[in-house]
Length: 292
Image (cartoon, rainbow, N blue to C red; front, side, top):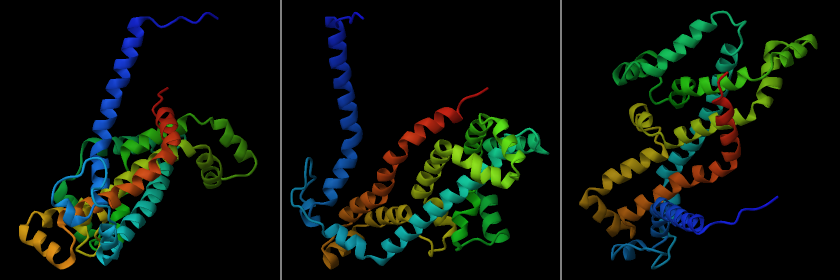
């Protein structure tokens, strides 16, 4: 097999392409890198000016302060709990719905599909949703307020629906001949065959739960503060100069260093999880997007 040698134009294109991609990567990653190195810089020293490549005066006092704060630890516990429980419950609930509407023998299948589509274009709005959750469901201040309203998402359901349609019906018929009922088929046959799409939807839900703060602000009643909500409050309080001065005088920690460190603590865990799910994410989203 003859290999064509690259022309001068091809080499110039590759060099410029790689240079362009390198610049894009630097522009994309540097803000996060800046936050990390600033969080490891001494808080008082950081007031002298920003750091650029590495900490000017290395210190972990910001992290010691952060992890000694009971409010932050409580927020971290609530965030982790809602991410794990909320993602698992949403994946299971959405998978059950998507598997049901992917089978033509389901009674009322078209009605369920139309109802799901309607939720993609219309919602009740902020005030009706707030009244529903707080007055009729009475979930305000209850941890279940993070789980129940987020069990179903139509967009995720239709991605799973496309995936389940690709599983041959003959596999289910063989299982039924062996005596399996629908529940056993779903849990022991369908779900193990659907790991890529399950991981993809779990990633969607996990990232959403981890970053969500507005529902905690509306329904938490001060008892269910998540890490992103804590970060929002820290940013808001840091805008007041008196508050910033109080931080420096009483703890030696500045409000800026608290904000930067909280950003790292908030985003680092979900960033670590993503590479482990990426192979399932790409495969799941591609298969789930196929149309027949």
